[in-house]
Image (tube, rainbow, N blue to C red):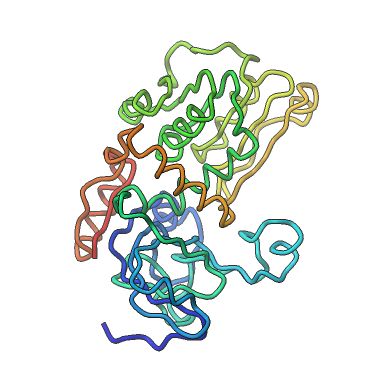
Length: 325
């Protein structure tokens, strides 16, 4: 690869491992829009091989992960609302046009250029690539979604046993929640749930929790069809965390009356702030021997086999398929 000319404050990172997020599959399937052509991929880990200008020189040579977006630090969301992930000038890796900047904007590549305003985090050697790569999307997003529920609770139901659901089990159990029940329509996806502290529940099986008894429901399926059941499960004063429906086909079939009469709180989470990525990596560092993290990511295939990687990701045989350039 010809060395790109770096702009002020930019970093050049050589990708060591990237994983396929469900949002990339949605883009490929046309469920969410993205400019074309572009380089997809935003879950990754790599090593800083060059930098320019005001970029932190101590990062050179270090293995790092980074926030999925850069933000300006000066707009209303950044300075006053504590939502840098909603920055007015947000640039999101893996979702940008090829002619935007260097073009090295995504992680399904040998290198990526990180812009100023990107949170870059050095990674301890004790954490393998396969644990870190999904942390800068799936795990950090779950940390953000569960931030209001970090203290011990009684009963939580997670709708969806994909990677976010598995992370949700681990985070809630380590926070001291008594029971975490995970519901999914695919029996194979539920096999990992007990290994991460949860109770598996097939969607067609007899309910393992009573209606109106649940403190917290977390939607991770991406399907609005589950919302009615989630509202029914919640106790009065319960909380509903909405995370998975990041696409236009997400009209909710629920009445305002159902929410009001039960005094429910609904909270949406999209992406995360740098503090959530930092907390995600610290969580992995502290819990690296508590859970079988290596069972979540498939053995990596080379970048030249990207079609096979995408097929593996679609198969759901693993919670994440991986690419090693």
